Image (spheres, rainbow, N blue to C red):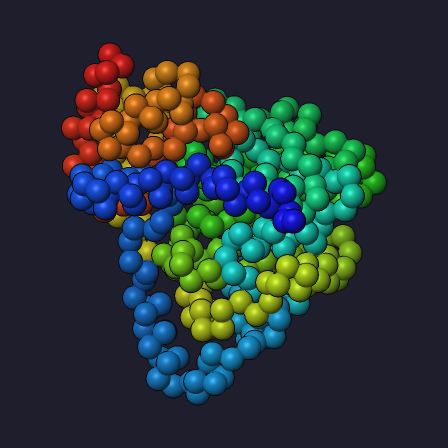
Length: 393
């Protein structure tokens, strides 16, 4: 009667969403100030002032029918040109508006790109730990998921990636700054990955695409974030303004397909066709125009840095082990017992809502999202101390 796979997906939400909804219920039961919800990556700093100023300016100066009406399917031409100009200027790559497709955030960018590229029998490599929905997006596009584990520092393991990329690999998804680890891949690592993909493309006789998922690009703590398109010609960037501009609920982003891709015009035509087939045409018109004036900007990253440092200090004082993240707004903490899900269940006794690492493709860790109000971290300190004592840390 209905699609069985989609029914199963609807009945079993992602673990992140399950914990988030559990937290909402607990807040209603005992009060929001008594629940320490570190589950979801919902930006916790306000959008930069330019965002609200541009919304007001547009509403007051642009005719309503034009402001809220349809744009072209791929996005308003002037917005696509603004994005292309920013990429050219900021990263020194020959981007053009003809390779930019405005989208409803990163999820739409990724699903459109995967559907544009995927043919029967294709595989896509994800570097674990990774965002859990990658697997859902790849399989929904008809592809097969192949994993390549990182090293202990959560940076790419070139040998593991080399082994994962094979004759059927159509693309590799790269996420830096990384969710869930906060790792930022270096210039040397990007150059090595580019070299590997060129070699694999030559062996395959067809391009292996690099799909760069970049919702956290601006959220770093001093680390340089190299631009993948500057290193590798067959790159498609999937960008979202959700995290950088604190616009998660507005669903706005873009796809930038390198003009240096093999058969670049065909790649972009497939992007447009996939957007049409999936119903992802004409991204939110108001916010297309808003983000065109806010490219490269972000909310107050220093607020996230202060949260990171406070939470990291609290956890380390309690005896937990974590590599300090270089970007994004997550701590990836080693679980004091092998079963991370069991650890997270025990944490609930203290109203600590943490996400087990199993959904991210690895075992033995938990993700703690620190894009919360500072007071949440401060109030949670005794709960973390009590949890640590249970484990004898």
